[in-house]
Structures are given as structure tokens and as C-alpha cells.
Image (cartoon, rainbow, N blue to C red; front, top):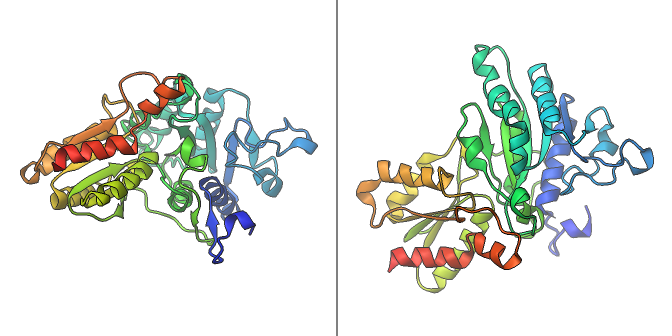
Length: 347
């Protein structure tokens, strides 16, 4: 344990990236059928002296090639259609591949492999073929990566039957959801927000022993009575910050950390809304056909009779992510915008 992962009290603490890396390493140790592939997940283009030069763009795979070797940790060409397709084939024939789709916006290159092959093979073969494929990818604005590298887009994946979609919000649930995804016999997409991987939210106590978090269950990150704030990935962090601000003004906000986009934990959302009678869904994805829209529809259909106000969606605008830092800051649903939306209901 390094000093960076240990608090003054001796409690073990990890960053988001360290937690994800540990989940990968532990699952590879537990199961020899787990392999990892993607662009620059090791680096060094096969040269021994540089074989762990990068560890992926966010360091999620740093050190794995040294532990498990190039047979199980494979750098790929810049060809998403090829290596995602290879992952589908590997999963169908007995391995448990974990594939790094570097940026979620690259889905346009490999959509056929995910939407038509990975998602449908178990169904089309009458359940005789398992697809234990994990794909992890980066999402989100806030780091100056411009329109093609800053999208969220998890609603596209959640729309497709046969795919499971999870979005961790902190180091603890990042490790647990990643391990659960790798052990699952269905294809699972893990969406990692760039700001969380960059250190927003800091470190957190993460148990050293392997553990999983159930896919399909939301977490009540903060209990409250006056308004429900539903967060997804990084927006959960902003919701918790907003709940602190609302508390200073005398209001009690309950924060639901969605965690699993598909399947979605409808029961936890509805139980909270029936208690608070107001809900704000905070989503960084585009507004049309979004997860926030799905939550609003769920609440309107199943809890309309208890609502004191219409369900509120707080989202990014229906526009490409701007490169300008000033405009990019405005693009993301911020703590201040969440507070403003909640107060609009509470007052």
C-alpha cells in the first residue's frame, strides 16, 4: 500500500482509477479466462523495455501486462470494429474478454458488433451461447476533449435489449460494478466518466478483498424527505454537492445513485418519489430519448397521484459538446443548476 492510498488513520483509500485497476487485476487472478484488449492498454508496441508505457489513456490497465503477460493483455490496432468483434467472438467461444472502447463516441465505428452481435447472439441461438463480454468506455465533458470525445450516449446502449449498462459514481462502486460485469454471462457496458477518472471526488475507502455490486440496483446515496435527486455517474457527485447546499437552506434532499442504467431499479426510484413527492433527474446525456426522460415517464406513469410537481429533467442541451472551456462548463448540469431546479419545486 502506498502513502497515496492510505489515510492518516490507516484506512485504505483508493482513487477511481486505482479501484478499477484493482478490480481488473483481481478478476484476472481469479479466472484465467479473463483477458483484456484495446488500444494502448499496455503500450510500447511490443517492445519489452516499453511494454507498460501507457496502461490505456486513463491508466485503468496500468501494470496488468507485467502481471499477466501479452497473451492475456493485448494491445490492438486503432480498429474498433475489429477488436470489439474479436471480443464478441472470444466471449462466444469460452473466454471472458474485457475490451476498452476508449471513448463512447467511437460507437459509430463498432455499433454492428455490439448492437447486432453481442446483444442478440444469446437470444438468436436459443440460449445455447453465452456472451460474457465486458466493454468499458469513457464518457463525459469537462476535460476539453471537444465534440467527438466528450459525449455520454449511454441511452443508445440502454435502448438495446440484451445489453446491461452500468455507470459507477465513486471508487467503491466502480470496483464492485466492474467485478460484477466481468463475472456476468451477458454483455455489460461500463461507462466511466472522465472527471471521476481524473480525480473529482477524491479517494474513498475500498476493501482490498474482491467484492461485487449487483447490476440492476440503485443506491440511496443520501436520505431525505423534501425532494428526490436522481444522479448518474458524475451527476451523482453534483447531486450530493447540491444536497449539501439545499440543507443549508433548510431542505432535505434524497439522492439516488442510479448505478445501473439497464436494467433500471424502478422500485428504488418510485419508493423515493412516493416519499418526497418531487423528483429531479440529472443526466449529462442529450435530452431526446434520454435516461432522464425514461425516469420522468416512469414517475408520471407509476406515481402521478403522489406528485406535488411535474417530474423535472436537468440535462445537457441538445447540442454538440463545445470545445470552448467557458461553454463546456455551461454544458454540464452543475451543482448550481441542480439547486436552482430543486428550489423551483420546493418554493
